[in-house]
Image (cartoon, rainbow, N blue to C red):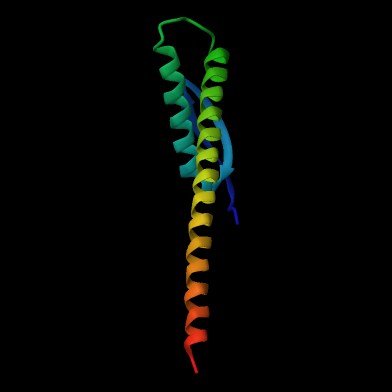
Length: 104
């Protein structure tokens, strides 16, 4: 459950923004703002002078790409674990069936 909302101030590329968020999400939002700022600063280091809007769009595209890659990896990893668990379950069931057959 989210708590009381508060307004915090974040900085991205030297510009201040007031953002409202639940108290219990404050730290996560601050970390996200730092990450966005870092990604946008990386775009600036390219040497080209472009608008903040372009930096924002490029940073958003890069972060969306990262997120989608992580989601795909997560799904792939989950599928692998499901196969392993199913394989282990099959082995345990076989051992139990064998044990039951051997009992008088």
